[in-house]
Length: 232
Ligand SMILES: [Zn+2]
Image (tube, rainbow, N blue to C red; front, side, top):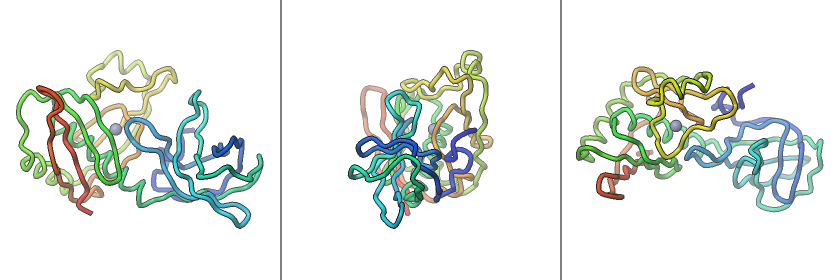
């Protein structure tokens, strides 16, 4: 089964049990926290058990990528089998979802090769090898017009052979989608963008709300970094 953050990215609480504890890292039987990856930060929130609670400061895959580890501020007095409640820092994650979907809209507006991208709750960025100059205010206006129009965001799993058959589907040249699982997750912004992506997204781009582009910075002769912020 696909992880919960794919199945329902709007779920914010979960009761589950401890599977493994090592120092300040906890693996749970189930989780709704997104692990750092694909340019999107790991989720944060709160872990509560038997009347105590502690902050989850990061979520990451284990070194072998087999497990999702919740990183806590301090080592825990938790045992395998303990029941715990997870609560997501929804305000932060929802900003990540809005920002991540917004970066896909930039990929629609700018057809040049994508060389990098990073999602943040306060500011996000996408990097392109531009073949022609981009006007900051014009791009911002086009982005906001798209968002105001709305479009559904959906995802599907396809056999990873699709990437060999249609290599153009991969927009970010610097980050190839993970292979070896047999299936690849494709994210579609209806009528606008379709690419492999492991991130969490809003259900409709209208949810992104108004955005601004504070700066476009030169990273090389053609390479430009476009910074994006949410207005609120
Ligand atoms: Zn993405």
